[in-house]
Each structure stands twice: as structure tokens, then as C-alpha cells.
Length: 287
Ligand SMILES: [Ca+2]
Ligand SMILES: [Ca+2]
Image 1 (cartoon, rainbow, N blue to C red):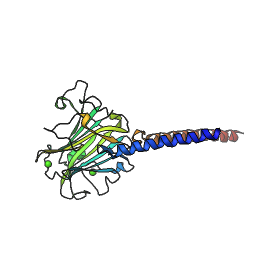
Image 2: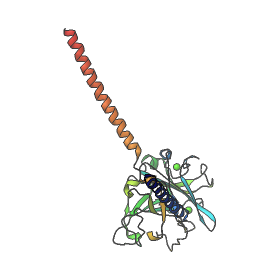
Image 3: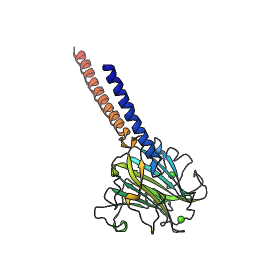
Image 4: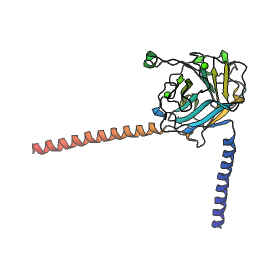
């Protein structure tokens, strides 16, 4: 009887695992999904708006985004600690329209795919810059964020917000670029996860605008826009963490906390040890 139960439990467990996997594969093959990787080398990224050195964005997921069979931009995504990192490398935009070329990255944090832009939807907009010494020194960035609200306002009516923890810089990428050495627009994003809330799947939408040709390319690819705007979240794709590592809180902080705790405990014990040692020594001296 015990054996029978054991066998039944094993069959049940393997069936549940199997059904999960089948579900996962079906979901992952869907062209409306971007799979985000967990990385360990993102702290080395130099936020200057372009490929700074050849291996800079190496440890990230890669999605080439096409229009009429040609790659128009490369999308690189990863997460580490408390941030999502994204590079939008627009090899098709070789004209530098400073302050006019831009990249927009939108996240539906609850992935509820509403027909209007609600307060769990965020768009991060980065404009092309020509950064000089002072911009770098003062860390000035030409970016802003837009958050939806519950009043179903149009995208243009919403307030442009500056978020301190959000880093977004766009410049012309050139000789160190992995995909094209011809100077072209590229945009680097660092988005605080705390702002969105942790999830293993977000609604996700990206577009790039080239001001000189007045063209918008987007992901998902089939969304056509009449003007420079953002489509409703129900048309967006998904940003998925396949191993669910995006749900895990940063480990570094807890390690740091334990290291600090250990140092404090060791420090206090050393002081106590010396006090006792000194007292014993002085009482011996009196004797
Ligand atoms: Ca860079
Ligand atoms: Ca341009």
C-alpha cells in the first residue's frame, strides 16, 4: 500500500513538472515575448549611451528587431540586483538628430494589458544627446518618465516626471559597437525594479524614432503608429524572466548586512576580550 502511494506521488509530481514545461515552451516560442536574462557583470556597464567597449553588453539577452526582413535595431536586456538594464542599438538610424531622435521603453508592471494607459504603466523616454565634459561631470541626462493614471488621459496629457534612480542616455555608437561601426543612435537604460514592483512577467513595448526620416520602428513589430505616440498596453508584448530570477531580491544587500553584522560582533568581542584581559593583568600586578 505504501509503495502504491509512493508511485502515485511520483506520477503526480512528474505530470505537474511536465505540464509546466509544455506550458513554458509554448509561451516562450511566442513572438510577443522577450526573455530577460539574469547577469552578474552589469555593474561594469559605462552609461554613456553607446557600446563603450566590445564586451560591455555581452552578458545580456539579444533580440534583433526587424522591419521588412532587415534588422532595424538590436535589443539587449538583462537584470541584476535592483535594476533592469536595456540597450537599444538603432543601427538603422545613422543621422544624429540631437534632442529629436529618441527611444521609448514602456513597462506594464502588472501586465494587465488594459485598453488605456493606467497607473501601473510606465514609459521611459531617452533623447539623443551630444554629451560634453560638463554633462558628464554634472551627470545631466536628457530623459524623463511618464506614468499613466486612472483617468484614461491621452499619452500627451500626462506629466513628464524626472526619476532620480532611472538612468537613460542616448548617444551615437561607433567603433566599439558589436553590430555596426557606422555611427548610429543607441540608448542605454537602467530602470529601478523597486519603482515597478518585482514580477517574472511585465507588459513590454519599445519604439525608436528617427527624426530625419520621420520613421518609428517598434517591438512588437506589427504595431503601426499614425504619429509619434505609444499604443495601448493591450497591444504590447511581454518581458519574461524564464527562470523567475527577477522575483528574487538582491542578494548583495543581505550579504553586505551579514558582513557588517559580523564585523560589529567581532569588534565588540575584541573590545570585551581586551577589557577582561587588562583587568586580569592589573589585578595580578596589585597582588
Ligand atoms: Ca556604454
Ligand atoms: Ca536620426
